[in-house]
Amino acid sequence: MELFWQLAGLSLTAFISATLLPAASEAALVALLYAYPDHALAAWAAASLGNTLGSLTSYAIGFKLPERADIAPRTMNYVKRYGVWILLFAWLPIVGDALPLAAGWLRLNVWWSVMMIGLGKMARYGVIWASVAYAIK
Image 1 (cartoon, rainbow, N blue to C red):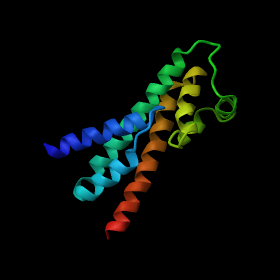
Image 2 (cartoon, rainbow, N blue to C red):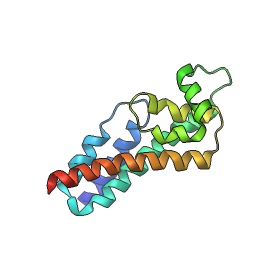
Image 3 (spheres, rainbow, N blue to C red):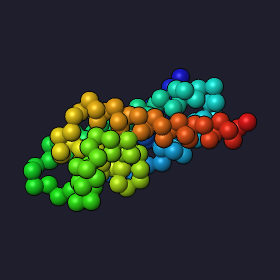
Image 4 (cartoon, one colour):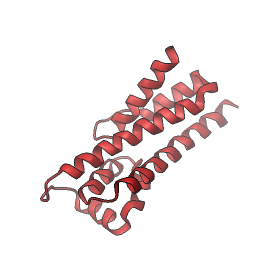
């Protein structure tokens, strides 16, 4: 039962860190991977899912913004130029939080957005998982 609550806490931390609020999902994932190395897949999935859902919340907020919303011009240019593919980088600090917001505002296809955001988040946490697994050995 303890592992369940720790995974839920990791997912919540990852969710919050995908929004404009600060959180340390990477540190939470690393701590969980060290504490429960046999449950690394569950930790990776919880972090990836929580962080993806957090970015999708930003997408939904962007979708609801009025036409005259003030979104950083540089971010908007990236999203307009690269389309849904730029969402693979929604995991980046600072600008990554704004990418889903801009994608929602521009009404990019929601299913492609979910897929690209999710793939980027899974890759990010996969690299952290691999790094910890390497360090443990």
